[in-house]
Length: 332
Image (cartoon, rainbow, N blue to C red; front, top):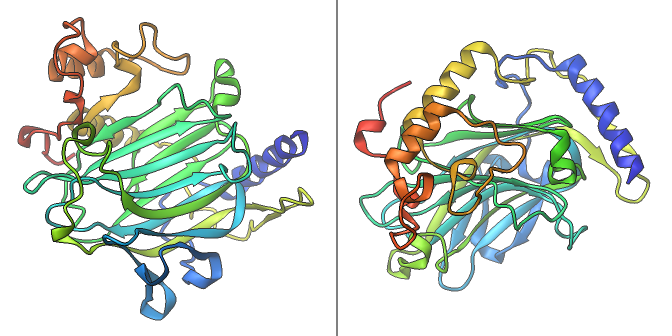
């Protein structure tokens, strides 16, 4: 694995040379066939718009998904996504990185998961990060949104370097994970592939499995477009890296700017409904990488005093699945 860490150092240095704190609008959008291949679902994956838009469908027969041709060690990855509408309980749409096919017992993962809901309630976003098979330490965060993700396309992005992971929605950072020495291998550090899937998560996705997929409303169609793969592709056999450093310096974010940090804090204050760092039912002591924000702690404690406070354990433990209240959906 030493070769991977060396490649990571080289990529990190190269990224610093080409990345800046601006938006990612100038990065090239690739056609599906240039960067991806179908993963499963047969006819439930359909390519549109001259090969630059993909529809993934879930029906009673199967879900569907696609996967990048290459595996990457760090980079910036983005898709514009429009989610299914109406009753979507139990439906899960995912845009994520993983190396589970190569490292079955100690794989890494960086997740955007979109969790459907019963009619009249909004989709929820869940992000998760783990490395070296540390799945027993859930690092989930969950949020409402300030828009309906089923009405139109919105951009969802992952920035992954050797020292940080940032999740973006429409160029607004919603979560920043900084690598700490205490995390060790729990920080994703091995090359990963990018995936997009839609599947039946009835057993857990909506109120712990209380509401299941109702195929009366099928087919459920998730639309993906404006696909961006900007990273360091790694040859799994030769451990050789193929990096494209020709992008304009303003194209990719290198971190969270002061203005973005204000927007991120406002987003989290208004829309975050769950964070593992504050879950006292799961962790008597927060995991080492957690930086406790007293204001976040107080807001979540009021939102759910059982999970985030000192409430009685016989109260409902899944209240953090609730969506943000209307009062929390103001602009930021």
